Length: 236
Image 1 (cartoon, rainbow, N blue to C red):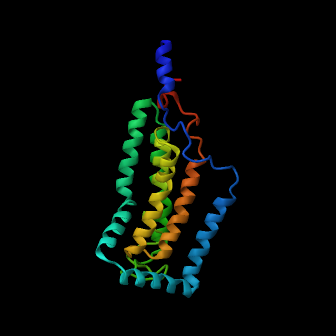
Image 2: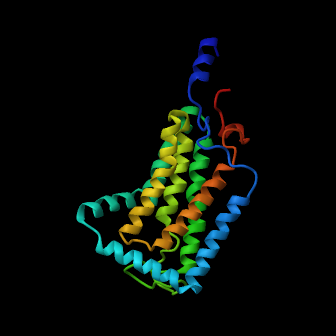
Image 3: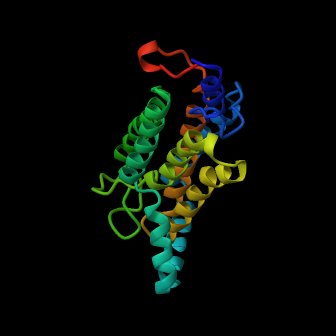
């Protein structure tokens, strides 16, 4: 490799080369707090009736205040959390980066996100078997055919967009990365609750777990984790 070629290689952005967030510290106290908050929320939905009345009041207010233009906008916000589309986008971005830089690092990160999310969120949905605001039972563990708690859309709105922010970090300014990381989750939370696709507490539960999954993914030093040479042939 000539000196000029080396200079071009060094100047080219490297995959996962700039952290999208300050690396998650080694302490697990905040992760434990997220788990405890989710457990308390779940227990309250089972044993504390006033929380169920809050869910009903929020749903009824949204149903009564839903002009058509706002409803269309809120549905658009909700679509930002569609898991299938997000998986396709993240895998395409990670595949492009892997091909450009000859390393599997981006694909491993993008592939782990849906696996962890599916195992945790879908497993909890099936276990809690809670209905939707206009279908099935409000109560937990009702054996409802609807499985709405916690909200997968809201969880996706954090996990997948954090992954995209990490993948695209070398190519985005810091303010743009912050927007990609955090804005979609908030918009999806508002959109899916306002449209009555989920109870308010479904969205809260999804947000708590999405943040937990994102923090777990960010604990891995993706830029430096050792890989076999056949999976990481990026130039030095």
